[in-house]
Picture 1: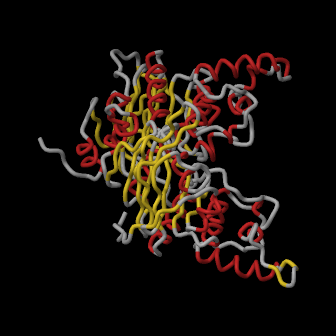
Picture 2 (picture 1 turned 120 degrees about the vertical axis):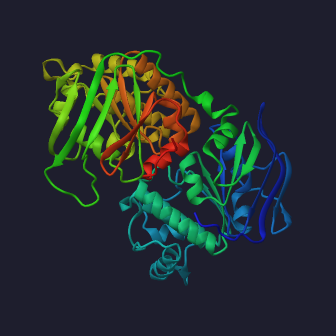
Length: 511
């Protein structure tokens, strides 16, 4: 990300303390923000991020400490006081009214009237201007209920601007967004910063940091434990977040492996329809053994996701050439039915879009791939359903363990655990994983790593693609590098990031 110039200090807090009964939520926190700066605040659940933002937004009164805006000490007894000082918070659960249109939401509580009569036309005209100023291409007359989650997030930003926000606090703004929606949001945030708005951006997605931040502060156990640049190594951020070395997140590698589960030798996939930007597998050679975790590395566009799609038959049809074997026998992979019959399971890189049905319950999602086991004689057995789901929730430590809870209301880490439970409930032989820890916090990542190693120790073969090289290096028994639909190099355990990058970019390694 290009460096932005940050200027005068907008906000400074010193020694903020806050207790809730016997819980010391904030332990003397110092934090500051400049005009035109995106200051990312990281921290695990319970680190104190939300409490600090509650203090800054007027929701909580601190027990001790000082808040300064424009170098003047301020005291907030309620959110209205913070609004008057130009501080507006956009919560993760957006405070928009679905039954009203965009214009009505933007002016809710500050409606425009003429002679005591609501001026809807004037509100809509001004709302349209606010949307345009926030880079939002939406009609102000649309109802909130008709908007996608990414569009609602943009409307929430426009609403903050309507309150003349100079300091904008964004709490996990991409938690419910697709990759494309998140990209658009990043552009809007950068535009706001360029206009001098100071932005506190709360996130647990480490991959977002270099894309959006000017500065990064990490909290742990109610205190600030470090402030660094957005280009700090991920291992450094993880150590600040969890208080232990990054390497400690990973379990020991496999001590022994079984027979080959998947073997591809000069395998190529010919899709029925050629799609622009879709990198077909041209020449793939790799083997995954029982008990082995194999990583796939490569630059964007190398063809990792397309390889998984072709092996599983997800969203693509065509035929494989070359050697394609499962358990030492030729396999006709390429359709979902054939792949699942051969013992292949697939966790996509978009759990919210293609991995889960968000408005369905945990039970309904978990049993999507195994309905036959709970439908004897063609009828759903509620007793079997409950037994299978409760066992899966316990096996994968999904919290809360409520089968009837909607998946939409779970954290990112627990949503990912539901995806794993759904795919692994049939006990496959091979698991294809595409970006398995995208959008989950570090603690949940460590749980997923431990879970994967446990599954591998029980004989599962795992093929995992990740854009996070430290993840591949720490987790995998070997790493295969892809470029332009070809496998071009295989590393043993523990290669350096530099070596993987060089091979990925077409450079030769030093002898």
